[in-house]
Length: 492
Image (cartoon, rainbow, N blue to C red; front, side, top):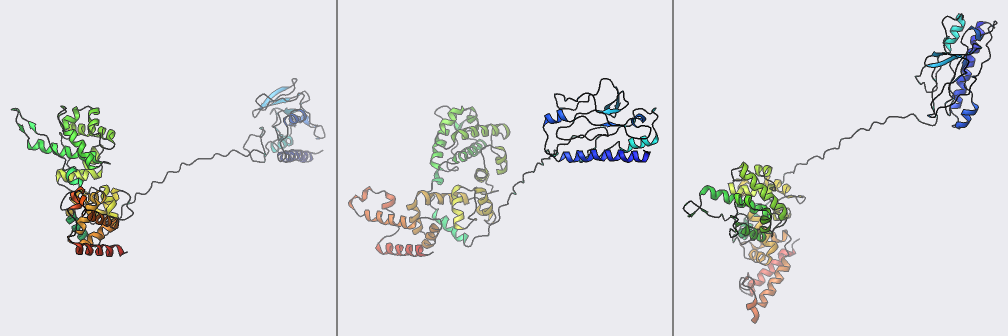
């Protein structure tokens, strides 16, 4: 056989092995026992001129003499006959047996067949022809099905049922920050000045709880004794004490009725127990438990005790015993002080108005009369919308005026209705009460029943408020009022 025919036969043999391996990759997974017991190790290749006879024919392939075994870790194990000389070729152990056949042994891969490859000549000194070198170099490398970049002498481990591992990179998605929506401006309400003037008229008697138990009304600084024992108050100390007591009164008023605040303030000003009254120094020297017992009547007294102690320490250390002169400083530096308290304190203590303190009564009333959006959800939104159109000249009194109005219509309903009927514009006053969902019908019927009972002999049992100050003097005036009320209630 000539050299060309030998090369063709060699190429065909390699293709047959490659086709068998690709076909076996698509079959189901074979059992380990069958692989270990039945499949011999392939890979016998001609290594030198002794692999061919004199006519150029290929010598039949020889199998390894020892069966290949696996290690306990299932890794490949290369074992050959003991009667052979070994040579390392590209990281694999190639052995040349006595018959001159070079072999490379490898454990069959589970579920697949390794593709046999043809190594280079074991020795450059062998007398092999150019044809043999060409055949060896042509069959040196084989291409696997998945084009694995392995060496020519490596067997490619392929598991057809196991997908290649893909690295999934988890990209951390940044949470989108909620856009802070600015509070939209509110247009100037129609007729707001007339409404404002009407409330001023209804509040001219100043008999609401906030008028005599509010923060400003509760400030009663204690006199100080000089070196001679005379009670005198220096103007500077008086102002500091007054401002500090205003601050404490506002801190106690949160979530608490004015009557309870007044009781707590009275306890704090009491000096009979040797506490020293309500000053910065006396609060610093006071035991927290004693302070807590003095303000037992207010809501959230434990938190307020902690905040009062902290505020007193800050004022003593950083402000020379006085309160900050701006609302912004109070909000930033004093614990327990929010915008509402800060603006009210600034107005009372420093006669400055950088903002409007919005109370819960204002938050409840203003959306109903159209002064702010009905969709406002908190006092801050109400404050910003109110400040957008209300002239600055009204910022100083709007809180006390409307808080007192809200207290009366909520807590003293008979008095509120009577004042509305006796005002200079009773019809407009009734419409105002109606707009804030004041039950005019119920209170009017109650007023009529009280007036009729006053004609009985037991009228002396009625209090002076319901018996001696009715909004009519005779039956004709009562009928006129009744007719006016019916007209107001009949309107949609």
